[in-house]
Image (cartoon, rainbow, N blue to C red):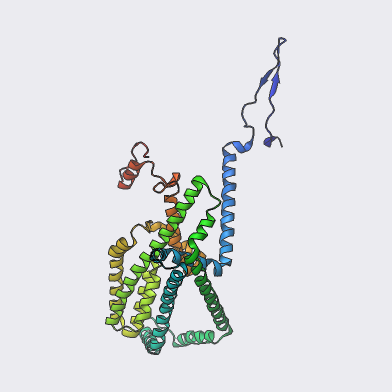
Amino acid sequence: MGLFRASSPVTVRGSAASDPVRVEPAGKPASLWQDGFGSLAIRSLQIILVVAVAAGLIVALRELTVVVIPLLLALILACAFAPVMAWLRRRGVPPLGATLLVLLVVVAILAGIGWLIVAAVRGQWEELSTKAQQGFQQLMDWISTLPFSIDQAQIDQWVDSATDFLTSAQFGSGALAGVSAVASFVTGFILLVVVLFFFLKDGPQMWAFVLRPFEGEKYARAVRIGSKTVSVFGSYVRGTASVAAVDALGILIGLLILQVPLAVPLAVLVFLLAFIPFVGATLAGILAALVALVANGWVVALLVVGVVVLVNQLEGNFLQPVLMGRSMKLHAFVVLIALTAGTVLGGIVGAVLAVPLTATAWGIIQVWDGEATPARWARRKHRADERALVAGRGPVTAAPAD
């Protein structure tokens, strides 16, 4: 294994009687880990270990979603209502009383949203079902007018296949899976309420306990990270909820004027989907247009699309810059990547949590070395070059900025 062993020095004697001269061998370093390829190998091993740890952590979190998701949601809600808790405590309200009051408000809001959806759907489901059957028949009539013929027997076969699936054991197993999902949801909701109670009541004490091992600069950094996390989470939830409420109200008014059924549950759905950037508004608009198409025809469906586009333009150009402020200062590309990764890893809940978690991570980087001092690698070092590159003038030789 001579390739991996350092070469020994060579002893040379001159022709005359003199002390031996030691000559160090040239060429290979003392260890192959010290040359360029060795450094690359070490870095690659480090990356592999980091990726393996991250993958294991993600797998563990996905296996514990019933616990992890309620914890994250409770943390975000606690951050959103932290100013309310602070205001109540400044007014002399005991911690337990303030916690119960805020918790009652949160549960009432969540229960009210669910009740609105269920009550509206139950009240208008029969009408919508009749309209859906009529729309399906109109679709069949339209298919018969196409220039290419579709065999009626093939259409009947599709209908029979759908009927067989609905009455099959496979659909029954899916229904059982749905029951299991409902049970998991109830369990997660109860855990969410309990954890939120403790976060609201004893959140500062819990965070103070977590900070005990840190000292000096590490302690100051941990304090900054905690403050920034509460600030970003809270600002994101409050801003997004305000924007979503205005969107839902605008679309609700439009649907009521156009007499589209299920206007209330569609507006509630708009409110909920607004917490998913980009995709949420599109999905809500598509669902509202489909309901209008089935129940009121294509003219009303086009008007609904116009209402959705108008509300989205109002949101993007006026509401978000005013209500969101700097709490979500992320590039659209970063938001899209975070949204995609969150959806792949956690489904709908992952899509909802991906953007606030990414925004919080970026906020932590911005206060890593001070209140207004980002981490060293994230600081702007060549401001003039950056401005020139953005303007398309190419880099300039500028002195690094502080």
